[in-house]
Length: 304
Image: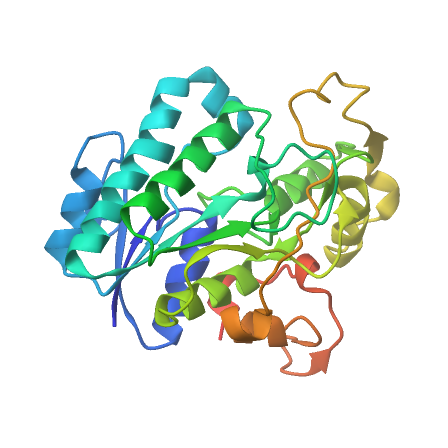
């Protein structure tokens, strides 16, 4: 199956393209500055043209103006890329019959409680969440067959030129910095390898539609996650500092509890990622060992 991946050069995109190829799919990589196609979602119609011109059977949308600060600084661009372009892509997929997997975020919720389900009311605290939620709605209005996976905090090492929370954290430790991590922000961390597996499965499972939640099996504070990643990366836990959203004045713009729940059975929606939650395989030795998915730190070349 030919799969068009928009946002292929980013952290999750690199892993997803590798996973799709390992699964036997033909991958067309598209991004603003690299890949088989140069596609700038800020240009009206550009992404829709890529859908039709490639005759893709499935489309994975990872392109976005990401995170809180960039969207706050340029809300017009965020609205264009995260919402308007999303709707255009969905219209093109509905017209061509392509399977659409449009990736969204846990940041659509306000964090007032945990265990968020797919049909809970979304009340974003910031422009990033608002534009991503608008994108979800535009996608499903234009193409009800589409699936919209909302991701928890995605962890894992990024390739050179890409950014990830894990890589940034390790870089700080390498410099001798003491990164301070929140004890009052709860997430459902999920390893990028598992996200890539899930997205590949969703490309093939056309009977799954609407919003689905994809997070790891545990809810952890950012501080608790950092302690685990420090140990997993070979650093001492003593190098991790402590702070809170309240202490740094971010309680109004960073949701407190984004623990994800789901109404779906993961065995049906993304079966391979579900299976990997109980026991991971060491990519270097091939030996199985218990390892929570959210602290996987292997590189994409080891995906298999």
